[in-house]
Image (cartoon, rainbow, N blue to C red; front, top):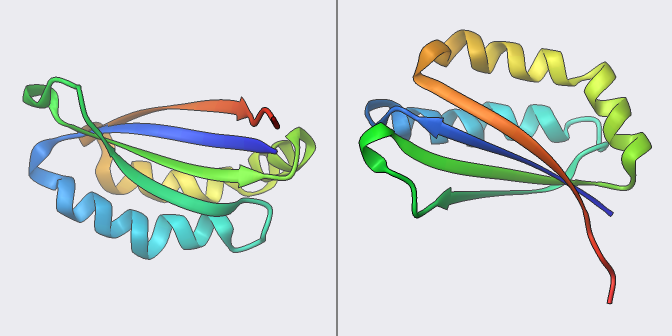
Length: 102
């Protein structure tokens, strides 16, 4: 299983609006096709809050092929509105992880 994690740093003054957007628009758009599943949203602690609040959103994908398909076919239509809405008030990076079965 593949875990697709994106961590966002968000200006403090928009944190509530940002979380609401993730819950109401971003997560449903990401999972609409079923390629990404099991969304989980978390606040990240241990960061300098003078520079903003950090949030991580995590999805799972069956395999790298499925994640690549989502990236090629759907990611732009999900990320473009997010960037347009919040512009320079957010910054983010994504990480792809493979779950180790034990």
